[in-house]
Image (cartoon, rainbow, N blue to C red; front, side):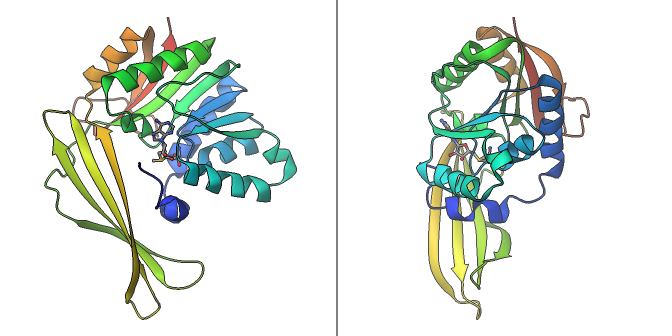
Length: 250
Ligand SMILES: C[S@@+](CC[C@H](N)C(=O)[O-])C[C@H]1O[C@@H](n2cnc3c(N)ncnc32)[C@H](O)[C@@H]1O
């Protein structure tokens, strides 16, 4: 499963998401509480919304990611922490005894649902938990991915305890399955640059087109209210690499 070994490094590499965060903050302000984040990870978006006064439930499948989120919760000021709840669960099928004004899936995480069954299961669960005037917001990578399977070095960041960690990626398209196999490698280096440890994380992502997602949304009785290509709200165009869906129940 993805996000196990790498959970400890997630926040070190989760930089440069200011625009995405502002996008969700604004939508959550418009929608009001409560909000539900699916695949909440270490909780970065959820904490930002809670700082704005929004109550957020975060659902997460990886025990290790959930642990990181809960660690941060313990250190957060009490007026923020009391607005947050991180729970274990699978976004392809979940049942909570609450309805939400906004349900969102940032960072392309909907694509971790690799099969149509999981994708539809997620959309149906979202529908069942969404307030009738609520919004469902998520993004999907629809651009080309490197499918050669060769390793690409992404970035190196310093570790708080000294040394550094380098993240590398290999992606491989599985055409018949309609999925992309992703392997992330984390090499730990000491201060002399010698590799002292290596961690791997494997995941299978759905290769989706905008038409695929529109079809799935219609199947689950959603309509697309707006389709953007960037978190600065540029409209989607056929050559855009990213599609950001704002959908509403019908
Ligand atoms: C790219 S991370 C995003 C984390 C966080 N939302 C953010 O934007 O920083 C994807 C997250 O989705 C979680 N995830 C993947 N499949 C899931 C599923 N079926 N149910 C719940 N969480 C899932 C992963 O464990 C991981 O924490």
